[in-house]
Length: 165
Image (cartoon, rainbow, N blue to C red; front, top):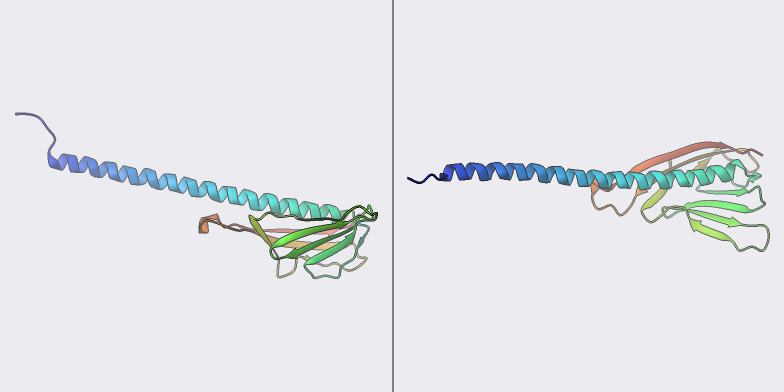
């Protein structure tokens, strides 16, 4: 008589391999989602920190604050005599710099298309008055264009800035 596997033994081994394959597949998919979530967090955090750093640096060394707050637009007179305006509109922070001489104006969005920016409580800039020395900045950066729910991230960035001048 030849030795061979019975149908029951073959069915059990196929079933165990299927369970093992499902486990490995679940782990692999979970790892991919975790990597995407981490990448989204890095983008949101780095863009938010870069935007806040730019605003803090300009406000800290500003000669004068030209804006009444609360608002979504901040205008300052920079130490080099340039007029600088930060505006939040349509999910973007726009930087506008008009140098005092005939140099061309500089205008750019500080965030990429991968993020959208909104103010905390509706406004980004508060506690500022024209000629004052203090600006309270608070904005929320959200990821955009996410493939699924696990790709969405939202972070709040806040700073209370005193002008040095």
